[in-house]
Image 1: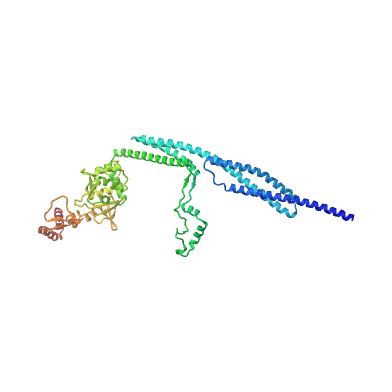
Image 2: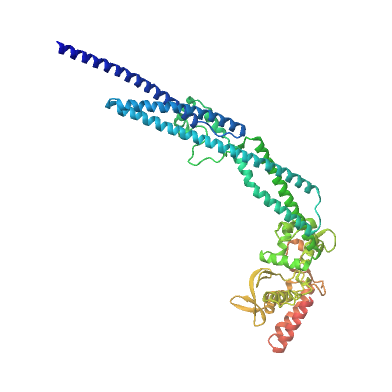
Length: 545
């Protein structure tokens, strides 16, 4: 019995000891459970606060306020660090004497607490660093903004004062002003990145109206919008709105909006000063161009202008009369000097209005204020040159110039009312006669030759066969400028639309005059001397007629 009693007492003591340990373990487990959940809840709130803190403020006062709030958060975090350390210490104590089945759970809680605390601590330090850097950048940007504003105000005042002054009429002074203004423009271009930096720092993208409308819709409206493309009542299963395409719509361009009033004022002032600078530059360049043009007009040479104009027309492969007909809108054969000037300027010929005013006075020979087609052609005639191309500079003539001079000399022998038409369309390329067929002209063995078929024919021989003044069988198509005017023929009036003067034989005297000559020609044609004499008489009589 004594042994049983002693054993009972021992077991009772062990039970009481075990019960007290279990009670202590329960209290520590409850304490650990409460501390872990409170710490994890605070860490979750801190994480949400740090992750969704919003964008950085745009002004210095808001930035300082956020820095103060973050400093109070850091102090709170320091207080929570004590709770974190005590919680981990309690977990370590329980871990040393807990049941093996609880080791995994306690270690998991310790790992979660430490990892979450490190993440929140890292985000807090980053937030603090970001706020401090933003505050420093705001100070720098605001200082830069004030500096740029002072510079712009001074530049605006300077440009306004310069625009109020008249521009000088001296070319060296204008060139010096242009150089000074170029230095100003370069300085302004170097400051452009600073303005862009300020504009970017205080700008925010505005949402397009369509996106704002979608954000304001209710969930039911969004669900309705999802079901609407599949509605069978709509053609092709699409909605009545904008058609769905695979390419993005370019119409919704999001423009940045500058919310800071001081920065907005800086951008507007910058644009205003830039426009003033461009206008100043334009005025200076126009004045310099005007003065240079005046200086060039003082030494104006119409012969040089005419040669440039004819060469320009040849390069375009156009005829001079085509341009005059284009200027002459009403086809009355004459245009005013202002119309003539505007027509030449619109043709893209390299000239100026001042130069064309001098040229128009030269074209207006009779001083009536009009330029007719005869004045136009006579003024552009190559024989206006007192010296041949290159002779003024004592330079040898090129082959093209020799060909052109020989062609002009030969064609000048024509005495018709309608001169034999010859137009140069390029170097060594001419169009002859009414057909205006393109032919090549070269100098072969010191003779100007024309390409005919597969061979070459001398220019004078070619004109004898094609010019009505030289070809006897074409002579009746030509009206002599000089000589008598017999009563037995008259030309067809020009208003009837005839370009070639064909003559009407109106009296019987023409037949009586030509019949003996024709019979004499055919009778004497079969003898050598008679053929020569008859041919000469026929040609002489035809010229007189």
